[in-house]
Length: 403
Ligand SMILES: *Cc1c(COP(=O)(O)O)cnc(C)c1O
Image (cartoon, rainbow, N blue to C red):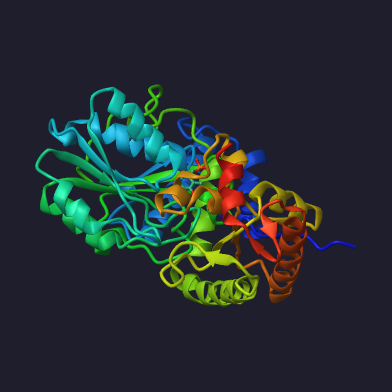
């Protein structure tokens, strides 16, 4: 009988029971529209305000008024970037600085803006995925409207020095946004102490529901609306509010931050270290990202002479959920832009595996992951044309990926 081990928490997380319980009444019993003047509308409005306060408190924001609910992390990123450079606060500045390893919600927004005449600089990263701070200092200028750099990477888990990046942006009068979708609920974030002007988050990455997120936007920053309509969320993201989703987000962020964060980080970090130690015993295996300064639950690897898709399918057969950045999964001929940006050769990036743990995983899960991945990698290599005499044949691997 197979076990089932969910080790893809960077893709999404299951809704926790406390979040599920908090949301239920707002789906069935208290269905009023928060804009309505009668009692059930008022109840919904109060629930929404409570959720907004919970998010503000978790981020150490100065006021709940600085929280704008959106339909998830991607929408928050779009609102922050497009909304800022097209809004009044940009004061005519057009230049945007971002990095090569951002989530597509940021990268594709920047690419679209580039076509509309906003110049964009894409910062390089080192082999562990840290943005080049010297390059940032060199490119940011009085023309720069916005610097947008993710707090932690979703594929390799590398955590950036957000405070230093914000400082450099501010030195030239630019505004700093961070996609903190992977960071919130996983590492400590304090928007005021870290100098963050705007921050995106998404509930389903920390045991909240999908389709709800938020943008923290420091008081005084004027954005161009993302969705026009009834004027909800200060007119920036109109539409009848997802009250149950907001309540779920509020509960999830309260559960994931504050005093609950440190013990959870400690537990997940130990579990992940056990996993990393076990997986790195497999020959011709490399850790990707920063092995120290990373998200507590993220472990990412590349296996030489292994195809990522095959790996995921065999692991699925053994009841394990993980993910890969290899070519087929990215929907193009190239492996993920993140693995390319950290300088991995094509033929090696094809064998990538990301396993992401949460506080719901156990040591038994980790031991099963190590045992199964070891077995599956062996099976795939035995069938591989680029695995010869017990080692990878890089010439053959190179030929294969280039034809
Ligand atoms: C998941 C994710 C997003 C997108 O969030 P959605 O809520 O799925 O739209 C954006 N950025 C990062 C870093 C993510 O991991």
